[in-house]
Image (cartoon, rainbow, N blue to C red; front, side, top):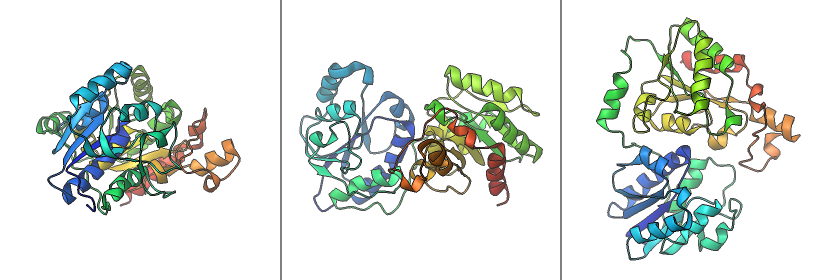
Length: 345
């Protein structure tokens, strides 16, 4: 590092996909300075996924605790100031929270990405590079420290018992597995049960095994039940049965994961699994699976033209098109064609 930093604090609370994007930055920092002490202020859900990441001291902040929780966090942090704070979240709550983290250098986003008074809480900015993936934007937080993220690696902290649990869910009979994680936390990004079922039935007819996964919300349970009801061959239903520590191990058993823009999309990618991403509400080139987008369905430009009256190339980078029924632009044929692109490998 041009300005050696012996202690760094990272602030990124959510969501699961975004905290997954931060892990390669941690690896870059550790590779350049093995002696650096890294602290990470994270939310409780993100901690459940990443707890145990080597060389990182986590501090969980509960968003429901407000100012009292911010004061408690300050008391938990080391007494001495950090050499640098990497403030990687622009939401107002995160900006205020950052004020409770003592640091000499306070590195934040470029002006084009700043909002909610972000600029008042930082004294340095990352380079302004429009048109890059979210992971690359996060990776550029090492540049004010004199580094460049040239390699992207995750090596998530997945314990052996999580892999053992995943292995116990079904016997490997040689059939490739299509795993469907049907729901995002942004409901308007979600595809439709009958269309998932149609692709799943196609995969089953091609000799694939179908597995459903997801969280414990009522939406995810209802969606999984609706998919299952329309399948010719029942899927293995694991919705609501795994923990966040077990999820990466579960996704790693798939040949292909079909999902909208969601946390499981990015966790699967981090585990080296190919992703059939379903994109109309969001731009896959900005927030799709980082390593390989060959098997994604991309109807983002169609959505831009229909709902915003202009091509995607004319939109501000990062624009979401989360309108009702936007995912209707993705057809069953789109899903099957993406599946076949992978099957033809």
